[in-house]
Image 1 (cartoon, rainbow, N blue to C red):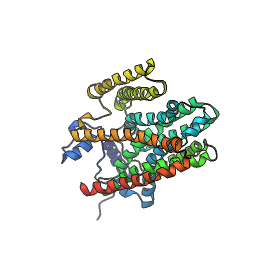
Image 2: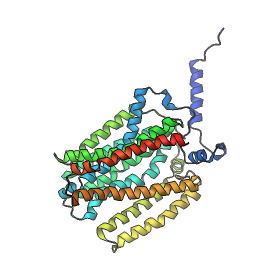
Image 3: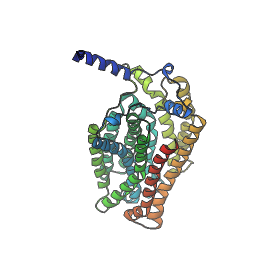
Image 4: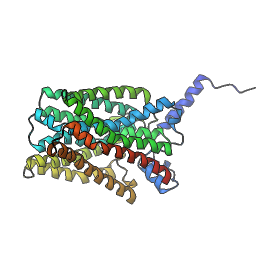
Length: 393
């Protein structure tokens, strides 16, 4: 005779106890020694190593939609950059911007917030849920893309302001999109492949953004941003249905003071402020020159706040945003290489368009056609890297 099946209330109690285990706070004493240094670095950096893949529970069509939506975070981020670079002189002519330094702020404002607010966005995803923050990021991105287009009826100040706030959207989407992949896929070739796809969408997204900007420029350039906003809104809606909800690392604190410590808002505020001040001074100096007092003051303040941030993270914060103990020699070297690569990429990406459109007098569409091979080679390199990682590990 088979044993009686558990009652509905008993099943509910078991599920509640499992849910509590998922939200159990992490303490250093609970850490188990990893089998090798490579895995130790990954664990210290907060990467998810799931024994069983959540992706295995998804049907193939839903998994394809899930991977596509997350990869669109990278694609739309680069499209948001390239759509302005391709038609920057058209926008500048509309707003009567003749100073090249001021013109560069149409791009720099977006890049400034994309890079700085990532520092906090990942922690918000840890606490409030990756899926929720991912959808919020796309919705925010959509709203300010629409405002950027509507700035055509106002002035350059509103357009630059909208571009600055527009960049917060990708800064929320990118880290939480990566976290969704990390929490959904178990370590292995499949996980390497989806991360490779994520990287491959960057050059492809830049070219797509430039192509549509060039096409809409034939009609009226604000449609570049209006249609972009509509697409972003659609992605946020679809994502709410197709993205699975992975378990969170921790439960949000119930008190305000506890939540502030959990999010490390003090460290985040100081770190973001330091980056914004430094980047503002560096970009604005090209507009007004280094002889302006406010440029020097903001640069010095940004530099002085950097050690304050490191002190808070290492000595004050109970839940630091950056796990400095994970920065071994190898990890630090890789981070330095990536920083140099992105710095070079920003310079190359801006001036290659200036060369094509100013010196060669190419239209936005023609300049895009000249640069398309970069997208193809970049996508191939990203996918090849994912395959090689699986072979070399």
